[in-house]
Length: 200
Image (tube, rainbow, N blue to C red; front, side, top):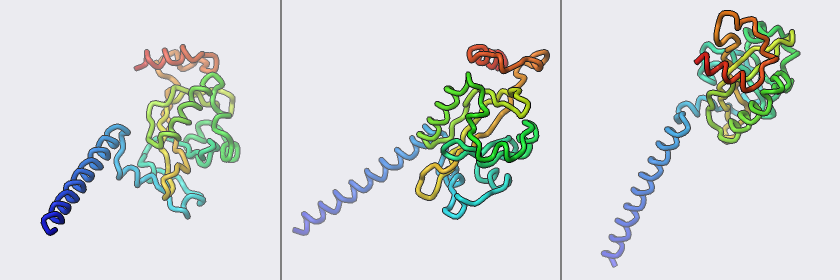
């Protein structure tokens, strides 16, 4: 009987060791595949109290670990919760023209299916997604600026996405020179993507 229990003990230890090893491999592969680690993930989590609270730019910058780029904070239904003051001034909007408005209402109609699909993917995968774009955002004078973006999901303590940070990189004049005067509102999707490819 003692010999049988001893064998059972060793089998149990072996199973635990295999499961521990397997979980470590899955975690490492997951980190490499999605491009973020557990430390990053913890940085994007809000407590219950913080979810409903209004926050300033400094708070959001620390939360999403971004020191310089302009960004928007979107609710999961893509209504705008926060916009950096520098981007707001550049685009010419008063704060009340942006806050609680649907982000898609500022995106060029030709880019809308593309950007909407990218945002849905970002919400579904719950991962940081870079290289969203190019897409155009309309300013207060109905002129368009060209952007690429990175989306950073912000989670609650249950692991659900509660906000999406959209980090914006202005590409309005990708080729320089005379293209500065180009009316981006008249450019179709194919030409827009060719323009970005030429600039790269």
